[in-house]
Each structure stands twice: as structure tokens, then as C-alpha cells.
Figure 1 (cartoon, rainbow, N blue to C red):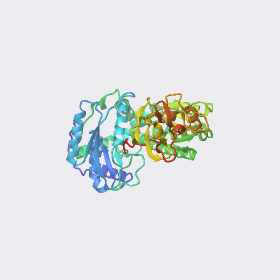
Figure 2 (cartoon, helix red, strand yellow):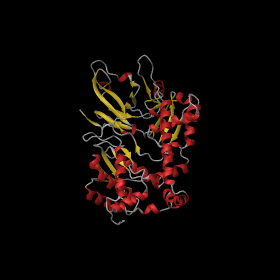
Figure 3 (cartoon, helix red, strand yellow):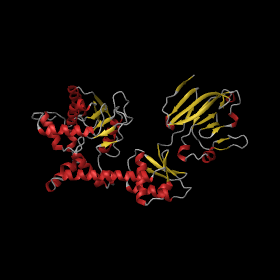
Figure 4 (cartoon, rainbow, N blue to C red):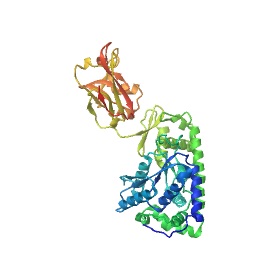
Length: 469
């Protein structure tokens, strides 16, 4: 923990920083907003906590803090305790969130993903982050060394996300909070000067000195060399990031214009890509992927996805993995498909009005009716079971035509291949009674006046299983 010499809180640098953040907040949030500060306990977030605490009355916003405990350091408990004491002294409510860091892509990336996921679940309008100009410069250089495109080189925006339409007290919080960075134009030296002037205390994360992390190596070994020859590099590179952010915004506008009328119900028409020059087609595909909230794939993977989408034979199955989702083509449209093929499902229906099938991504509703649906009498007391395709199923939905394979019926109904494995089916014993998107077998269809149940499949319905009536 670092102590400091106390100076007058009215010193010019401290007062100047207060006014700078006040002006930044005025352009970011509206009165009555609920703001959660991401508090690590380090000097940057402690300074932002102090600033927001001083400004919350003037700017009229509600302030809380959230500390994300990654569990990566033996001192993480000390840091959480420090954050509790600091917030208690200021009268700021604090939430401590413990997360599990997935290390598959590296500790840094895993910790960042876990942290942002936890902060994104906070019930608020805005999450305030303490990133500053030095962080921005480091991010720009790291992205440059990764070979990032214009959007990546724009580094961190001052505002990430769409501000909620209403942020006055009494309104519900935004579904996804907006991330704001009020210190993005402030240097690390200015933050330290403010902390000393205010007599603040903070904790030091020992991992910030470990050179095996790329950001630390850049900060401690590379940037001091650059500073010796180019002392104004921070302002210059931050200015470049702003220019690149403007260019990225223009590319987004171009993609939105190119994709007008071509993106509908989560699908992108292949023809819209085909009529564009290659660079604009790639830009539109990036826009489509970004709309889905996905991490952007590398240039080579993106190029391969575009090549297959445009060049594969019309009847060929296109499926290109792009990280957590797969780009699939069906009926001249591209879809971003997530999730794995569900495991075999065998669940007995016990009269529930609705059965949540999380593995299939939806809820099966069973409405009691007369004269329409699956006849309860024709089940002859045998139970209905809920399952998925096993292969070789046949169904007769038209009494004038013979039983046909479920595969052919799904193809005729133009159900995309990846959805066919996730559609619920109803069986009576080994006989297929009903298939979502296809209909009810003739032999089990209710006649006039018969008691029946009408199955209805609703994808992405989060309702829980309801009891029988």
C-alpha cells in the first residue's frame, strides 16, 4: 500500500483534473444515471473513485463501485478488503465479484474477458473505467504489433455502447451498461499528482512489474526508450488513435449503407457481398460479425469466410469457424451460429404447460385444447416423450400422402441444417408424433371435440418449466 505526502486539495493540478472530469462526464451521462465504478484498488481507479465521489452531487448521478476479484494473486483478499474500507469511508456502496479466469488464451486475455463479463452484468446505466492516456498509447501499440485493422488501432473509445434512452431515477437500468472512460485524455503523471495532492492511498499489484506480460514489457522497457527521443509521443499517439476512431466510424457508416436491406433477422444476404468490391465486402462482413457482439477474427480467417461464402457451389455446405460461432450459408444467406449440437435428449412430458429445454435453446409450450393438436385419447394412456432427431424418423402429416422421412420434410420446409438438430420432437413409444416446424402425425391428430394438447416451440424463451394444471 502506498502512502503519500498531503497537499492542499485546492492545488491547481487537482482542481484542473476535477474540472476536466466534470466536463467529460457532462458529455457522457445524464442526470439521474446510475454509475458503477470498476475499482481495482490501484491508483488509477482510486483517483477516479475520489473524483466521482466529489462530482456526484454536482452532476446528479448515483454512484456505486464494483471490485472484480480474479483470484490470481495471493493478495487478492487484501485488495478486496482495501476496497471495502475505502468505499465505506466515502459512503459508496461496493460489490465484490469473484470470477474464474479461463487461461486457454493466456492469463491477460482470460482475466480481461472475465472482468468485462462481470462488469457487463452490473445493474446500472454506466460502468466507469479508469483507463488513461498512457493506457491508450499502450493499447494502440499492442494492436499495431498484432497487425490490427483500423477499428483495432482506434484503441479504446471514451464511450463504448449505446447510452440508455432514459437514465433518470426510477427507470430500469440498461440491459447492457455503457462503458465510459472519463480519464482517457489524462496522463499517468497527472493521476499520480492528484493522488498525492489529495493524500490518497492505494494498493500496488505486483504483477504490474512482471515483464512476461506484453503490456508491462512495453511500459517498462520500450516506452522509456521512445520517450527519450520523442517526449511528446503520448499526445501524438493518442491523437492518431482519435483519427483512427473517426476512420473506423466512417467505415461503419459505409458498411451500414452497403448492408441496408441486406441484414434481416440475424442473416446477411450473400448477394449484398457479391455486388461489392473486395475491400467493401470484407468491411460489410466485419460489420455483420460486430453486430453479433463477436470478437473480430483475423484477416486470414475473415478472407477464408468470404471466399467460401461467395465461391462455394450453391448446394455446398458452408461452415467456417470464427471463434465462438460458425459462419454458415443457407438459402443465399449467411448466419452466425453458436452452440454445440445437443446431446441425445429423452424427457417424459408429465403434463407441464411449458418445458424449458436449455440444451436446445428454447421452451416447448403445451396448450390444452379441444379438437386441435395431439389427441390425448389416441395416446391410449401411453406417455409422450420429448427428444431430438435420432436418424431415420418418418412422419405422415398429410393423409393423402405416404409417410416421409423427417429429413426430407425439414429440407422442404427450408429449415437450416444446424437448426434441424436442435428442434424438439414428440414421441409416443418409438412413433414420431410431432416435429417442430413440420406438424402432427395424422394418426395422432385430434378430431372435433376431443381433448388435445397443442405443442408450440419457442426458441430462446427463458421461461422456467411451469407445473401442470
